[in-house]
Structures are given as C-alpha cells and as structure tokens.
Length: 504
Image (cartoon, rainbow, N blue to C red; front, side):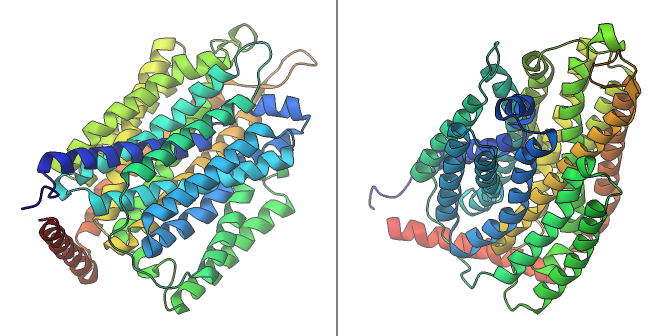
C-alpha cells in the first residue's frame, strides 16, 4: 500500500487547518460591517463631507453585500468554492487598498462596495465545511467559523479605536488593517482549502440575480437612509413601494426560470424560512448592542446626567471587547450543544441568555460592571445563535443549495443590522436633552432604555421562533429534502471510499 494514503491524524490536522483558515476569512468579512462605525466622524472631517454623504460609507457596503452574497454563493455551488473564494478575497483586497490610499469620498465608497462583496465568503466557507469536514465534526466546525462573525464585528471596533487614537487620527490605517488581514486569509485559502469535489454546473441566473439585487437595494436603501431623507418623504415611501413591486417581479422570474438562482421551494421551506427570521432578529439585537453601548458609554455624565464620558477607544476596548471575546469562546460551547442537544435547543438557550442580558442592560446600565456583564451575556446569546443557524440550514437543504441558502441567511442578518441602525438612530434623535446653545443635541437616557428593551423583545421572538416555528417545521421536512440529504450522505461516503482506494 502506498504511503500516499492519509492517516487519520493527517486528515484531522488538514481539516483543522481548513476550519481555522475559513474562520479567519469569515472574521475578516464581519469586520467590514463595523470597521467604519467609530471613524465616520474622522472621515467626515478629513474629507469635508456632509453627514448624509458620509453615511454612504456604511450603506454602500450593506447594499453590495446584499446584492453579491446570494449571487456568489450560488456561483460557488455551481463552479467551485475555492476559485470563488479566491476571487472574492482578491476583490476585497483591492477594495481595501483603494480605501486606504484615496482621499476622495467617491473612490472610498467604491472601495467599500468592493469590500461588501466579501460578505459572500461566509456562505462559501460553510459550503466548503459541509464538503470537507467529517459529519461528527461538522457542527463544531460550523460553530467556530460562525462564532468568528461576532468576534470580528467587535474586533473591528477595537482595532479602529486603537489605530485612530491620538491628536491626529488617520482613518487610512484602518483600511490597511483590513487589507493585511485579507491577504493573510487569501494565502491561507490558497494553501489549505482543496478544490471542490462537487460542482453542480449549469447556467448563471443573471435575471434572477438582477431582480433580487434590485429588490434588496430598494428595501435596504430607505432603511439605511430614511433618517436622512425623512421616513414619510417621497423617496423613502417610493423606495419601499418599489421593493414590494420588485418582490413580485423576482418571485415571478424565479418561478419561470429553468435553473433559478434561488429555488423558491427552498426559500419558503419552513426550517429555512424560520431560521432566516431568527437571523434577522439576531442581527438586529447584535447591532443594537454595539451601537447602543458605544453611544451610551460616551455620553458626558456632567452634561446629561448619565454615561461614563468614555473615549471611542475606551468604548471599544473596555465595554465591547469582553462581549466579542465571550462570543468567540461561546461559539465552541454552542457547537458542542448543537451536536448533543440539537440546533433548535441551542438557539433557544441563546435567546434566553439574550433576554437576560438585555433585561439587565435595560434596568441597570449606570455602572461599568453592569454594562460589561450584560454585554457578556449578550455575546454568549449571539454566539449560540450563530452556531445554531448554519446547522439548521445545512440540515434542511441538499448540498448543492448550501451556498445560496446560507447566503440568504447572511442577508437576513444584514437586513436586521440595517434595521437596528435605522431604529436606534431615529430613537436617539427623537428625544434630546436641553443643552446650552451651540452644543450638539444629545439623547435622553430613556431612549437608550427603550432601545435595549426592544432588542430584548427581539430575543423573545427568537425564542418563540425556536420553540414554536422550528418545532413545527421539524415535523414538516419534505420527502424531497429527506431524500436529497440521504442521497448526499451516501454519495459522500462513496466518494471517500473511492478516494482512499485511489490513494492506496
């Protein structure tokens, strides 16, 4: 027998390398969403832009992610995950370098559009895991990679705070950090991720991609810009109306295309539908915590009667970093729970921690230990949710739909984050403290309390989704899905036997 036959230990180490590299890639993806939050003011001052104009630095990434994630997730399923991963990382590196070198707001926004396309890395990474990782290790691997999402979001806030400290902050350093991390992730993918063993092939559904992209833009644009445009303005209402019309156009298109980008039967399949609803609520709660706590702790107590007067750096390192660290560690326990008790139970447990965390934050946010302790509970809740959702998706769709199904789930979280940003920004601006003339308006404490209470209610809904919606969904798994998953398992076992025989 040839020495080329892999031993169990060598296969295990190879799979560990794949998981770590894909975890790094997913972390870099999640950093793109929050990377600019602490530095928007610096960008606005340096580029002499208006608040409305600089808000496009975040909106551009959100829209790009919404448009490209399902398209590239499906493209990876059809034509190979590794080349798609490599291509997306190259685009992200180019966008990061562009953002790091330009002094033009227009080119900065273009760079952010290129960074947003990298969001497709996460569903692609889960597709690779499903293909390469042994079934008994799959839940833990997915939990680790998913856990890096919450960790990356918090790490971006900390990194941005550290890199822009001092009297002369330079926001370009933040984008150089993104470029360096993306290069490391690209090298890891090239060295450790094997070529795809299965490709569905087929033609790309460009019409479906176009109509879905238009639908998402029309939906997310007014959500992200409504505060600037006015929630009852013609532009906002017109965009929402356009989103409703495009929903009908998209559904009609996908129902008539021979090889649709999104299989509508999969899209409305109850486990997938309820998991996406949970993703939207989790995205809302996570972003509410990041934004709410960041603003709360920076409030000057001597002027408004609450807050801690923290700097941007202190807000990130002291108050938000513990949440991200707990999220990373909690993801491992979440993976164990998914394997032993099931994804639905894990999601329920996470929702309960989220309710406790936001209840604590709502009722007692006047001391540093309370804010940090509540945040750690919320971090645990998010990590359990992120560990459970990929497992729910993978258990509900055949292998060739893993990329697109997880891509849609990523979009649901992005939509939740966008809604959280819009809601919290509007709430904080709706009631302000009376300050001397010439000073900027600052929100009343009651608005933070209300924001945290709403996020706690979102976790209550996540628990309801897990306990009621997904329980019902489990009894409704269609014969088609059961047959597809069983067929996939048999094909994978056969492929492993053939691979071992060829190596012998």
